[in-house]
Image (cartoon, rainbow, N blue to C red; front, side, top):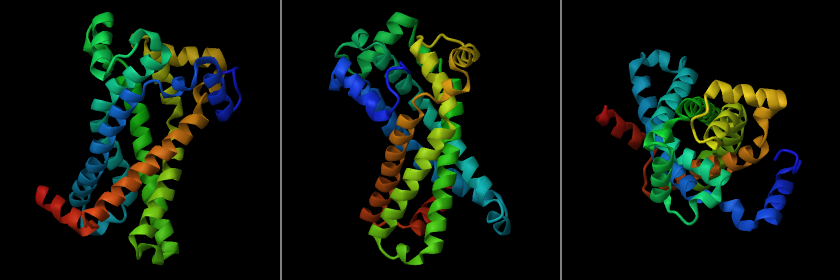
Length: 265
């Protein structure tokens, strides 16, 4: 309900007042499953494709095509991640749109209920096209912003590379900005995806986009953008931070990853 509140905090309090605080946590199970799968596939995938593409071009051209390699690596890694994120996202949107339908169902029971009531498990992939568009844009911008910001910060303050704590701080800040920027840029595709899945997944993508435009014009594609930017900024910042913490905890450095990927390739 776009008219219910004009701010992120106001919307949260309105939901809590009308539906209870637990309503803010609807869909937590598919959200957790989707983001875990995303994190487990997109970051190793990015490292793998980045290394693969760097090896595919001449060493002298690697710096020249660095931005293109970052963008393409992010896109390819995100495509792999979409395989698991799509059904999780479809379940999350259905749970939020109609929580009474699922009651206390677990993740597997939710998927089984949707399959039984809507014609098979394939309906969980009906929103794949807008999801791929959203996630590929999101992934490309995220990795590009993170890579560019981290490099700029270290170039401006080389001393920050000296300790694990300072590197973690840089990753956290760069991840926060990258997550927020990528969320804002991919918001129109997210609006279409939400409309498709809220209607049961059988809603044509172009029809959904046309209806959003007819209802509210261009602004309709950016409803909820602030909440999504805040959420994505925190999540992506946390993912990059965890990635750095694990590398430090396991004493894995950049050269170690490069050597492992060289052997893998």
